[in-house]
Image 1: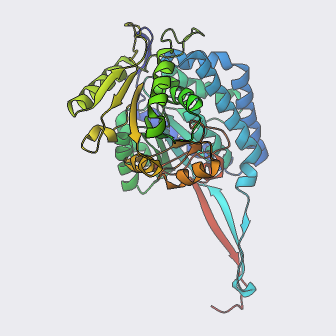
Image 2: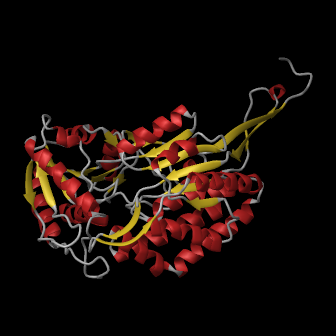
Length: 463
């Protein structure tokens, strides 16, 4: 079975689920399209009732959903609870703001004889959401909340190791009052992606995943002339300038690199530290990582979770070995982790000069790359020496300086004096090999929308 719940803490297979059949996919498409034809004309107020109801259910049943996330991908239970709350906040954001974000826009004209142009924003149809395992609920909600609020329908292909989390969305949205067909989880097999995207009732695909997956899905969407948004990998820079509060920066670096066991696209993967504070920062960082406690993700005292699967741990270990073969220096910096389950020992990687291709890799787990920067300009150079451009952080006591450095970093998002963390009311997305398009706020809700011009012109106006 391709879809299976496997507890990463024990490597026990809990449940398996069969792939969807071709007939089930076709039924989902037909029901989604039929429901869309009515939903597109449903008022924003009625759509908002569903979004608010979904948020209320998530808040009410937070422990139930959090336990599922912890079971299927090993996330710390407290981190799972925070993810469920963030998901509720996203539903609430669009309940409160969707109508204003999509209201018609009167366009200015130089000459009144040119007409009375108005830009209206209309839903397009069915959106395919292909989502990853590292945030079982947030990744899905940041697509379905805006797209359902806009009047579209959504079919979900979730990660194969999250079948129970995926199924929970069917129950959630039905209980929230969403009309049948507008959302459905599909245990889709690989050939179904092309089947869905080639269907004329489908308007596009939203993918969060690896760079490799993005290349494949974007190719299928492109051949089908369908809109795509891609949120792919990242190797975010965490810059510590010479005037930073080094103690606080080091504490944030430990958190920024190791939350969700380091399996975050916007994790602080590349620490770039000014020469003047490098030794002090490194000592504090090692001390902080050594204090992390790996163990049962359900235990409140655990601060370092296992990776999402044994395969993920094995792949990361192989990647580290290949980096060492290219000349990278690797040092163990954390306390020993349990041998049981998909745990990975925290590592520090250095000697990543311009000749080592590993400096351009994304390490999805508790592997930290560290660089010594000569000065501010060198820190910016190192930060931009990456095929990725998702997020980043800059630490400095001078906010104006931080803003200047942030503008020089070629990436989609930069936080100053804080690790990057997703919020319901902030946009999310990157550039370069990190993908294209934006999610959340007004940018996200307008990705799969027809921005239609309607212009009323005097019949006697000049051509």
